[in-house]
Length: 287
Length: 263
Image (cartoon, rainbow over all chains, first blue to last red; front, side, top):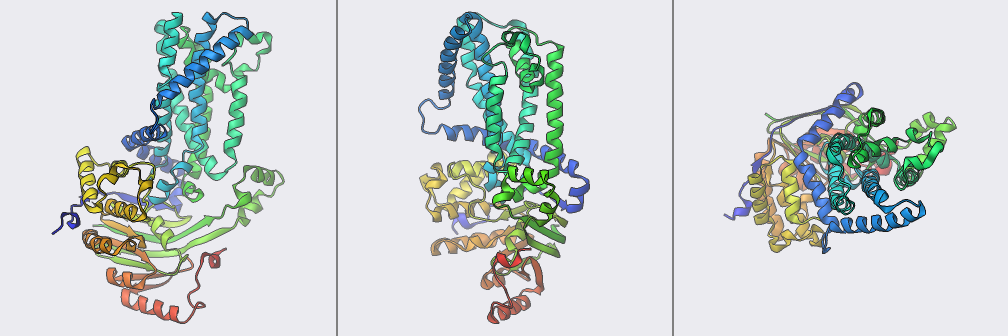
């Protein structure tokens, strides 16, 4: 007998599935928690999906994702020289600041715009098998982390060129990145669900991020505002950016900045949770 | 012991066209106090209504009905993809749902990568994934195409890959849409042999089809779906005979099309 038609079958692990409208009504938070748990249990699949997305994006290109590295380097070089002249500051102090700001902002706004496709992009998967929705968030976060990693060499080169190594304060970047990743997962769940339901959200998100780019100290330093910067603490992006950027500039962000970053993140994650948990069961119908 | 329970299931499909997709329209509707009414007036397709049945080990259920009768929605609900607005679905035992030939495959990835992803979804070890790869490779006869993106495949090749992948694992509960009947004759003979071994291995089968022949050869029990409801439920030959009679009596007896279930 032909080998191919013999039952070479592998057994699937046994599972128990119990979905009821009543449980969804009363235990919606528990179900959402199970979704996150189930997504984490499939972390290997999430990692692979994210990795394959990057591989696909650059399939057939000679330099692959290092195009990212090059374009960031060119961007920072050009902007750095131009703005140092515009602001009449010296390149030596300005460029490390600008390089860090731009790399971090690219990562942040990258997650935000990518998050809009979290569920829409996985429409095929969502409609063909039961899967934790959190898995798709993992996929988006993973591919954005990989993108960010490709910009690290640019930062290192700038540090080396300007001799601006940050010292031991740099370690504070790790708790900051932890806050960033939790926020990134939340962003994927929130914008993923909203954009699946309302198809006109992505352009809104795009313009909000564009305004945020100019109202957040990325190209300019907060000191340059002088007495006009009273509104800066109201900008959540400012706190988030600062807790990750200051350590790498060799400065400790200080408790107020940490409190602001944690506070904004907590409110954001809580709001996201309430919304995601509420609509989780409906997402498949929005595809 | 596998077990499937469908209890008072109702599934509604919101119809989002034009205005309902737009945030702007929704916000303005809310601002002018029309949201509540809008919420109730939003058109929905009543895809499933008051579905009740229980399946135990050994049951081979066929879902029959015209296009739009709710067969595929029923399978998706049993698979846990759509969560019902009322009622309860319980499935005890490993489950595999063969809903379409694409099986959630990413057309830009190679066949091999798609197989790997499927294995990871099933939480297979590296060794099991390699075994899965070999098994599908043997069955689908794709040769070097396995390392090319799936979008370059002919439709027959996609079906062979999807079918091979779907039938390479042995679930206790097998949910199957009728797509597996597609393919060329040589493939069909081979597919049937393989399908038989999967169906034999499964404890519970739910097969959806509008082809009476397929259902009568695979199933022992048949549910006749009509406009999202169970019209008849019983032994395969009785229900199929009633279904055929109704079909012969003309379209009034067995109305077709999703339009008729617009609520």
